[in-house]
Image 1 (tube, rainbow, N blue to C red):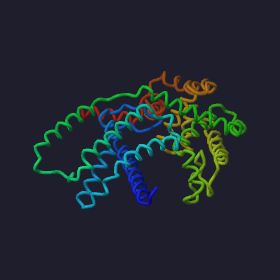
Image 2 (image 1 turned 90 degrees about the vertical axis):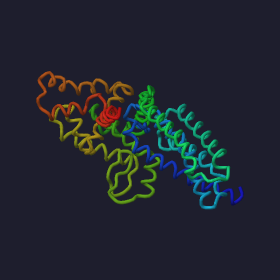
Image 3 (image 1 turned 180 degrees about the horizontal axis):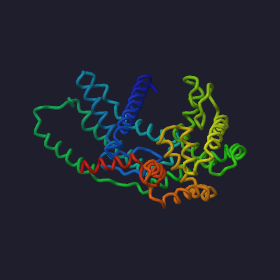
Image 4 (image 1 turned 60 degrees about the horizontal axis):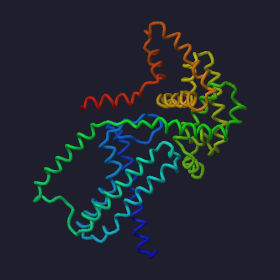
Length: 357
């Protein structure tokens, strides 16, 4: 490959990475408006227009903006290879999911559809807007055409109120948890069985492993071990604090010690409260406790049925207590935290959406 082409493709790839990071940043801040991100814990209810546009149009818009700047600055030759940005953008998106172990959470048919439409839209923008050597900046003399823009905005507003649910998201979520659990059991099952005898505590351990592996996939943990940022940072598959980087096996052993000690410290508490206390000792974040409980439920009901009797028994004391009038506000809050209903974040999204309607 000639040096000039190498420079062009390297620049386009770098711009595609920049676009990828920018779109991800926009997506994280658009969740409350109905954007569906790749997640393990929510059943996506998508705003159709927003999700469709954010998955298909960014490369085309990015190419147009760069080309407009190139023409306006007198460097119009820079626009001639910009269509490669769209190609590299979707290659990066396709590679991101398996690299970070999220491939089982993705609807690949929908991804292929969005990628195809996105590349075609970028090709159309390149052919009809970028290649013609003319300014792409707004022209006040054609202000009458803004009526069409207003109509498009109106259609977007209507389409964005169309909420769709992904019926297969639960299947993909269960598949991800099953794969993560089976991998953890194969790699660390002997260590866990040696150190832990209580089935409920084992279930907590596996749920923590699955969640931490989701948050810190193997490629990230490898980078943490290769380039430790500071002493005392959490490392390994169970993300245990240590002055030195830990291997996954070492973090398992240390994590088991922490959870076992906490389990014994809370042995006089009711079962459901004991679970919450142990997980909270491991990570104080209430959202962390809620998500680990969700994974425990999936493992017990969908993956390893040997845990199911023990898992269901945790509700026995709660059921007996709930037969009495629940006048204690703290008790109601604790029970709600372990309910199977939507998370507080999802409820706030639904409330906000109703207000907008």
